[in-house]
Image (cartoon, rainbow, N blue to C red; front, side, top):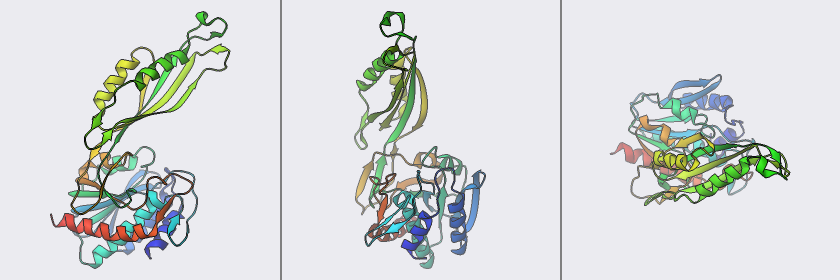
Length: 331
């Protein structure tokens, strides 16, 4: 199956996070037909990670995720792009990895494998479970849209929720109440004044106040309020959590939603490099060796209604993946 047809076939199989069974079945059969030995790792009913190996011990793994964000929409194409949900994130990348794998096998290279995981777009449960597998690899090349640049690092994330409680009252008599909204706003103001860490490679940490909720009406002192905040981190998260806890103190309840450490990545000469502000499964795949991050497509169109991947970048990426695997095998 040619690379563009393969990408469109993958896109046309819906695989929103939690419902990856059908695309997993397709990939499993494709890899079996290509001559790989398949290990399925069950995550939940009809939802599996897929590890594909040859008879040779793998030194390098090509890895990406098979889930997408909602909503599903099918593949279309024009002369320049393939469109559809998952086109760049990451079904187009899956197609390039599969095509590169075929080229490697045809050239006599066998000591590599492929790993496809579920759940990256939500909780990375696939990567977390996959890390329990032990195939002995020394390097893992993770596919995400990097515009065919080799990432030297990516930021981490700390996402948390703050909940404030107060006492309701008529807004004409605020002294009889205790505004949860006011408490929350005070804490948010202090957080916005927090000097966030910087790193000489990863750059500045950034904060986003993504959601605020509170109160029931303009004329009622609010007895409840909450906010969800995310910080794209560039240093170890523990010190940042401590600083946030000191600001929040007794004013609000603090609940960590998710956290993932920033990553410094393995590189080889000869590639344009980039630092990426988004997170990947890499922090959860440490048992597979030194991580690299590379793939066709732009993150700027991932998760959008105009998701697409340039056809030429896909063709180029096949050669790049082949070169990366061979270069790592030569080390």
